[in-house]
Structure formats: C-alpha cells, structure tokens
Length: 389
Image (cartoon, rainbow, N blue to C red; front, side, top):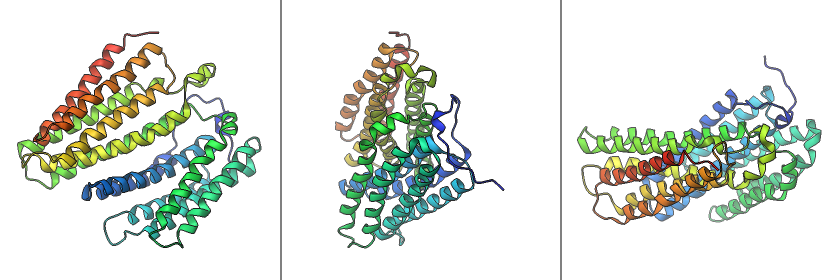
C-alpha cells in the first residue's frame, strides 16, 4: 500500500526534467468529460446567450484545473492522501459536468454543490502544505484565507435563489482570481517550476484540441458518406494539426530553463498563464464549429453564426498564441524570432475576418479558407526560423 508522505516544496529541487505524474494525467480525464459536455451544450445553442453561458462555465472549469495545477506544481506529493483528494475532486468535476448537460441532470444547484466541494478539497491540500512546508507558510496562509473566503461564498450560493446564484458565483470567482494578485510578492519567493508548468498547460491544450477530433467524428457519424462532409472533415483535421503545430513547435521559448534563471525577466508569467484561458476556450469552440461545418457540408451554405464561430475561434486562438509568444522567454532563437512569430499570428487575423464577412460560402470552402490562412502562418514561421537576435 502506498504510504502517506508530507508535501514538500517541489520547485526548490534541482530537477530540470520534472514531468507530469500519472496521477495528474488521470486527473485530467475528468476535465476531458467536462469540456465534452460543455461542447455539447454549445452545439445545441449557438446564440449569443449560449456562447456567453459557455464562456462563463468554461472559465470556471479551467480555473478548477489551473488551481490544482498550481498546487501540484509547488507541492505535489504522490501519496495516499493526494490520491484520495484527487479522486474526490474528480468526482466533483464529473458531477459538475453532469449538471451542465442538456438532460434532466442539468441544475445550477448541483453545479454550485460540486464546485464548492472541489474548492474545499483544494483548501484541504493547501492546509496540509501549510502544516508541513514551513518555508512557504506565508504564501499558503494567504491562499487559505483568500480561497477559503471564495469557497465560503460558493457554499452560500447553494442556499440563494437560482436567479441570484450566478451573481454570487461572480463574486466568488473575483475573490479567487484576486487572491494570487494580492499574494504576488510571496508567490515570487516561491517560483513556479519552469519545466513542469509548460508541460501541464501543453497537456490541457492537447485536451481541448482533442475535442475537435472527437467533434469531426461525431459530425460524420450523423451523415451518410458523401464528398462534401468528408472533404470538410479532412480540411478540419488539417486546420487542427496546423494549430497544434503553431503552439508546440514554438514551445521551447515559452519559459526560461532553471539553469537560465538570470534571464527570467523575459518571461511574463501572469500574462503567459492567463492567456491560456482564451486560447483553450477558443480551441474548444473551434471543435464545436467544426462539427457544425461537417453537419452542414453539402446541404447548404454555412450560416453566418456557424461561419463566425469557426473563423472567430481560430482568430482568438491565433491572438492568444501571439500574446503567449510575446510573454515568453526569448528562447534559443532570440528576440527577432520571437517578435516575428508574434507578428505572423496577429497578421493572420484580418484575413480570417474577411472570410467571416463572405456570405454564401459552403462549409468546406470556409474551412479551406481558414486552412489557407493557417498554412500561410506556418510558412511565415518557417521563414522566420532563420532569424537571430
């Protein structure tokens, strides 16, 4: 039986090759389910109200994942207690996902209970770290106070009328997000792991990109085999591959290596971390838009809503990647390369807007246009590869 071991400060260890644990990968599976359920929700309601609701719930789901990731980055210890807490959090996330479905389980009350449970379990983890890791007690004390207040507000939201509940959630989330900012000086004394953190955010990016692959299969499964849906599917998977390429090909410059702490000023961690939220959101929306494109292919022109959902998602994704690149360490290829990569992504956005403004296009041609823009960005990236500075 695996023993109980106290948490320790992982970021103080000289471990350049630290990787995500099997427990972290298993934990991510609950969020795969959550994102899939949310995508199904948006698939059935692409109105502005539906998109706004999707964005809010996705942000809350992402914050749960990010909160656990920040804890694990500093204090992770794979012992019996950690596994039990991870299982409890996964159960809360699964219940949360079910509450967001379009079926009979849909319930803001169930969502509030599940989310509050997930936040209280996080507090248990920080309370344990506060007890055992003496050198970070000022930081963990601040987290316990701020996140504890937010968890209390989440708990209060269970008892308020349903119409008021979202307002209470906004207050709770505001407290949650303010807490790291208030504790920023103490956080700077306990830096994040620059090998582990990028991998964790990269894995979440893979997670949401995987939804686009699932969406393409789901779209085809509802149709008889014909040229237009298959072409749209092929183009869609190529766009997803291009987005994957853009993000991960340039990942070596995302943060400084532990041996290069002297150049840490080049990394803007707050911008880098929080820009991953709109990036992940846009990639998840991209998957929903692809399913609509496959469903509509061959029958009629792509509706304005579905067209803008597709080009808008890719535009936001490219904008997010540009900002992440701007906030990254220069990496081995230098400042000029980083600047060029950032500009390539921003320059592509107007061309996507032009595609969105063109009415009457069938889904396969909209998708082909988006692919053309992505290929142009990749070609520009390859041309930028020779830059040094």
